[in-house]
Picture 1 (cartoon, helix red, strand yellow):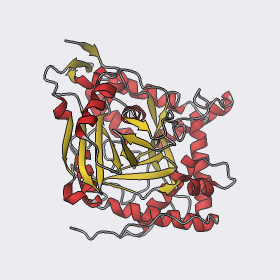
Picture 2 (cartoon, one colour):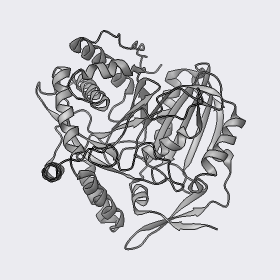
Picture 3 (cartoon, helix red, strand yellow):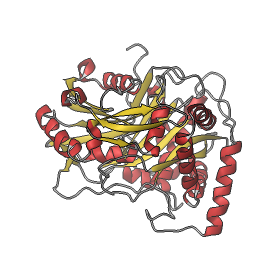
Picture 4 (spheres, helix red, strand yellow):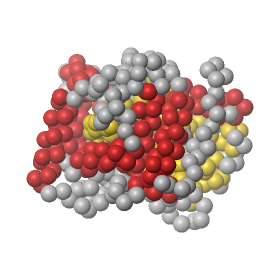
Length: 449
């Protein structure tokens, strides 16, 4: 039986697993036609299990003064336990599949077996919906997405090219190095911010429960998103981040208790930063190779151009710093520390962010799963401690889809965030003079429907 010690960066996520915050990366893709279950299982065997032996292994945690964990072969491995085929709930309606994804987000993966699962839901809007969950100890968001995309084939037979680079300039990812003095200053500012930051009181705070929600936007045309940047030098990621911040401001304004102050009021997010070259083939052991950084972002009432400038400044400071290396080292120290110490440190830092905001690049060109064209892809990162919100920006085939994951005890209606995003996108286009029409807004369903 194969046994190997789990990397510290991976075991860290096992220590954070809680019933109210399962540490699983959840992805969803949907297709224009139904996917054949036999072909899907064959792809999983050949492109996941054969390439990544960790997917046949389960975690074993050794408690003691210093906790450590190992991967051990699952002697009872059964592919049918991990690839589950069923009819799409609710007759294949989007609302029913959203509820299904939310339920999955709130379900702990079984540590007695490899901690991943794929649900193939047949009959979703005339095609299939594929819900994929990888425990964070197996892979980070980028690597789990790479593994998922490894199941796909390009429609035009050309190798897939990622739609965007994820990471900060100054690393080998982009080749632009910040001046050492600038990097030192920005890192010092970041460290001070982490130590002293406290979020303003908003309706996004509360005690998480087990029930989770999930929703996703209509696809935003990438050409329109790029047009919102104008000549500001802002990236697509900056624009999408500013749209999310504006959507949150609109959402908070609609709630009892009044809106945020009409100024550059900021709310901090945990933002993952990839620490390896984009598009790199995921290693056999998958694993985690990223850092979480705390980024205060503007959520007050302001015109979109002003919000975009503020977002661009905040993200640029992180990119031109060594803060990702600093937070990565801190995560390693927490994972190696005694459990009570690690829990206290996690609670301290987890309370400083309202949630997780991440940008995941997908293929530029259309892809197919088992010969069936993929219509869209979106995902959700997990949250920890009292964080009640996770947002993922996913780019695929000339479109951007934004997924909102919520804790229903704190944010009961994820669809309200989708509606707020559509309104913000429309208003931003009007302010920037972008002629392309925004995507249609889906009718809001009534509570209980």
